[in-house]
Length: 243
Image 1 (cartoon, rainbow, N blue to C red):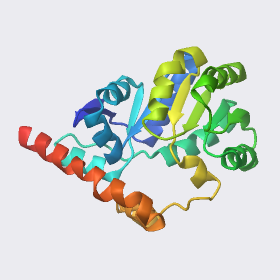
Image 2 (cartoon, helix red, strand yellow):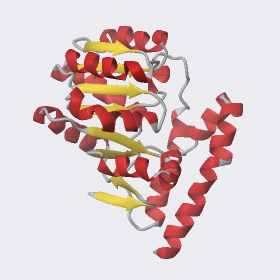
Image 3 (tube, rainbow, N blue to C red):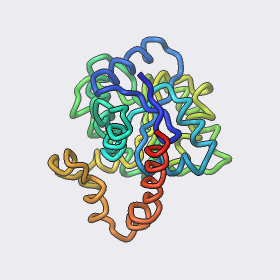
Image 4 (cartoon, one colour):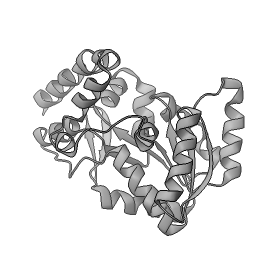
């Protein structure tokens, strides 16, 4: 079931249900786009109608962030659970090895994306990395990137570039790339190769993963978490009053 929260759609699915949906997408062979929504994405979408439209048009939308789950409960439309991009990426890599799905990795620095391409087939024997490319290309090279992905014939495309660039890239080129399931994964590749450490499980469950990220990079994250994302409180309050 798809619900609406502060202008963004969210699918009320747990992890296993999400994986079943992805499997159906891949069986169909038709292109599908995935997105996760968190506080930052909802705030950006409230200011950018184009991004909001892309999010709401996606075929699968998961809630990545406990504040979104908590807000859903307070608004009387509780989401089953948080399905993070990092966790879904890991689960799909494991399932791709089991099912014989081909995976393409796009984004991050060269040493990071090549590290994922090297480490994961060893972690999940049978996993096929159909190709990879770093996240640095010019506008003139965009069609070359699309052609490389299309030629690799992946079943899954993971895109590790920043928002809203990755959402716009996928919306623009999904039909041309013909990838059954394309998913933006943000900084997941850095976590996957150990360049960025994920919060301890107790912090994840307590909804404090954002605070752990802030402690890792206080200068970079202060503006996002303590200035820009504060608009989420106002968006929630407006919807709560309306309800």
